[in-house]
Length: 158
Image 1 (cartoon, rainbow, N blue to C red):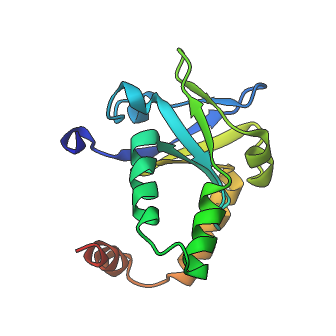
Image 2: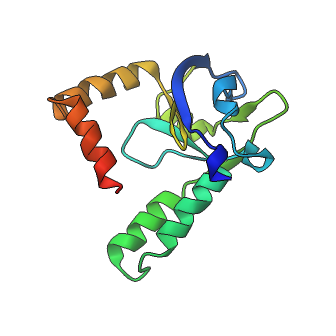
Image 3: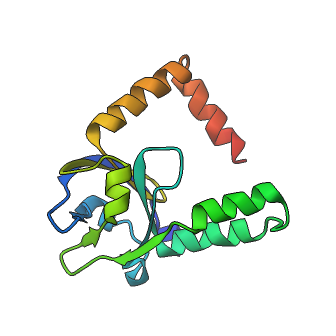
């Protein structure tokens, strides 16, 4: 199954409709594992000002990983609660749209136009202005050799 997954990549400008739905871009839909991944886990309880869409099978792996941590350690318990208490599950409709929770749209300042970004094994949805600010702030924070930064990130997973 994992061999088929190439990863979500690219960025696309879309709009959230009046019913809080967004179409999943065709390029991103092609990367889903199988029919079961028409279900997405939706969350926005991280420090980024975006909504994250995880295919159900990918999020299942995250839960398995988190479940291995000691539940009696206060930091682990906090991380579990903060992440898992605020997740939503939605399935793509026949036109490949997914309904986004109104409270997450408000929290991330998304109203109307948005930026849909493939970031490997999940998708992010941003207010375009917030994403520009994020890139500017991150460029200041991580200034220097971008190639070196990528190498460091890639080596951290070996």
